[in-house]
Length: 249
Image (cartoon, rainbow, N blue to C red):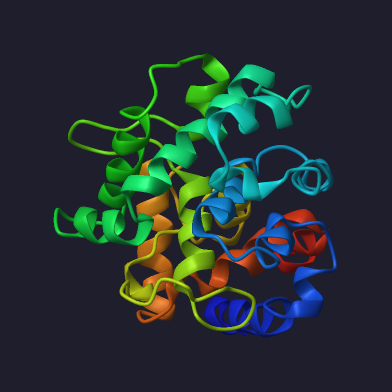
């Protein structure tokens, strides 16, 4: 069986509601929310252990994005998550409240796409976010990420995962952003899918960076140019399970 056929089989098996709920995943929480920014919060907190991510997300009141800054400060007392302390989380919600009053995520992505790839959409979002609040800390910066001047170097895994949720309109994803073509999406590469992709021979680049994202995305586009990122969830689940050792024997 060719690698393309093998991955297509895993897509059919794993890109299902049963596959999504077979193990903790932040998309489980994002599916329950009808708010673009709240869904982005789910994606940007998606680092670390999947069970702990979902456990934390279940404690958040996402409606605070639509609340007053005073209520945000009062309601998030005592909240913290890994790299983000209480003050970080309060300011994250304050910033997103301000963002919602001025900007549309989908429109910023489209503005970025006019400059090139979808990474420029990420750059537009980060630029606007960081202009809305003078607060800064390592936890706050880690959550939102850093932009770039000319060329992307970061894999931007969490943003690309969010875009996958919001743009793809089949199987497990949400298909909320109707103006963006899913063929433009980039692989939400994390260290696990990077390892899996190296092991399967999908990529050769050993550095975990934006060039590896592009190498893998272009390889997946050769399998399906219209929907290359349909392979993301399957590769992620393969990395979580013991299946990789059987696939590479």
